[in-house]
Amino acid sequence: MKKAVSNIKLIRESKSFIDCLHAVLLAANLYKEPKYMLSGKSGMAFKFCVHRELLPLSVTSYGQWEAEHHEGMENVGILSNSFAGYTRHPTFPLYQEAAIFKIKQSIDKGIAVIFWEPEFCVIHGYDDEEQIFFYTNGLDEEEKVVLYDNFGLNITPFWYVHIVTGKADVSDREAIQMSLQTAIMEWETSHKTPPDTSIASGRLGIQYWINALECGKFDQRGAAYILSAAIQSKCEITSYMNEVQGMIPQVSSACKIYLKLSSLYEEFRRLKHDDTFELIRGLKEAMNMEEKAIKELKKVTSTFPNSYPWVPRWGTGPTR
Amino acid sequence: MNKYPNSKSLAEKFEISTRQAHRDIEYMTSSMRAPLRYVAKHRGYEYTDDTYILPNIYLTEEEREVLQFLSYRYEQVNISNTGKNVSRLSHLFRQLSGIQSEPEQSIERLPMFEYNSVLLQMLSILTTAIKEKKMVELILQDGNRIETVVGYPTRLMYRYGEDYLFMNVSVEKEKQFPLKNISKVHVRQENEQDIPGLTGEIQNRVIGNNHSIQRKPFLARIKLKEQLKEESWYGFHAKKVDENHVYEIQFFDHDAFLSLLFEKEWKSIESPRWLKEQLQQRCSNILKKL
Image (cartoon, rainbow over all chains, first blue to last red; front, side):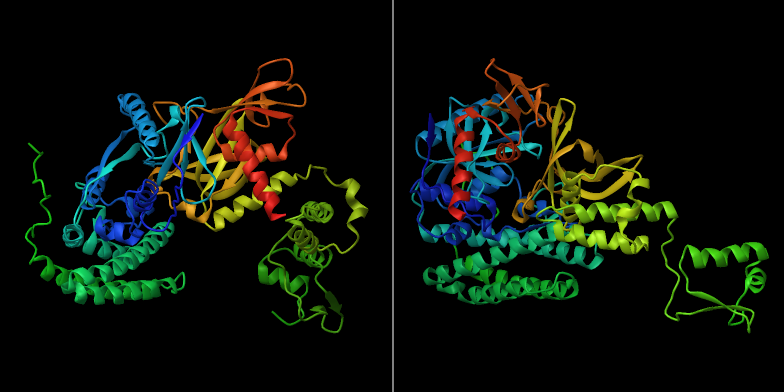
């Protein structure tokens, strides 16, 4: 007997985790705002990483997923659990069994589940008789299926499941403050996946992008994916900032810069396939603009009570 | 070299024997169809057509005949979506062969080999995927062993009487697959390429060799029209369930299997339910469009 969560509308446009999270939250009636607000408030829109050779992995290599996603969801008051690991580990079958149980439990409660296929997809149903999960990847309308036995096995060596369990009320102002601090931190952190320095974040990420284009040794598919993801992120940030300035008027100067930045990125769409020189020139300009925007945000966040974005609200150690 | 070379001046110029030079002139006129004319007044040859240039492809007579044969064969092919290109190829082969006569005349003397429209279709898909750098999914069958391999095809090569596809299945790991073992090619869509697993971890879902835990296949109980001679239904492992031609068929790629259900004959699907529903959904989507 098939059991499924209805009203899952997954559309791939932003980072795939945000696309999935938004679809899950909307269907479970846990969130009402547009996707750019979720992307902005969670800080996910500000996450930007680039591999030295512009590999397509850049877009999802924005750090340790469990930490990054939990922090982002915490910002908007979403309570959640995650399971992740490497499929080669001997404990994988046990984790797999536990995850299957939890996923079914969540679907019974009417909350769909995010998992790594890759990219991130949404499991919206299951059928115990046939031992399968039903999921959607947002790329086409057809429902996909995966056997319980194969759950977690994918083309990458790792597996990941994120289950939303509830929602707490977080004031808009608090969520926005945290998101702006995340924006600064993401821009200023050079590497989000240490000790690996082949992937750079924020400012250095753009420098990696420029370097790869200048030396010509890069993955073309990845370059296109990074560009389209960056354009979408800037677009989301601009819409988000536009909303934010209604609540925190001090961000208006940063908002103006982001608006220009977004238009600049939009212009990149019109560049011809081999016009790397123009793209490099544009990226240098974009880097300077974003630097200015972050400076403006710093001025704003310096007035916030918690102005140390790199320290999570619960401190650096585990809760006691 | 004067404007009217002859065998003697050619022999001196290229340091060959006069006899060899004479044979070369003969070859130019007979095999390369050079419009040469001997001008007695100047005791040498000239081109009667100034626009003639030596071809940069040299074909033996046998190769010429094979091209003529290919031209003939391709002319007769009629595949709905490749027909135009096939006919163009036929024209090209005939031009290359340089023989303007009706191809039928020498057909009986030519070596016979099978024209394979499935192979041609596959080559066409793969060539496009290579050119457009698209990710493809191959269903491979070698005896009873079925594999699904995903990667980026890089080139096609013919050697030792066999066509091969070279494909990057992971970073700096290129594998070759004989085309005869490829039973299905599925080109991933543009947006499907955004697989972050990244160039570093290109899909390679070879059954049982990629993970410590083996991927398990989907099982479908399907009633076929007749008994199978071997334990395989168009490349998918099939195990007989009862005497009514009901088989339990294993598959890993449900897309490839659904496509097969559209193409081949069968009587009924007994299970799984989701497969029936997906097939029904696809049929209704098509019907809506018609």
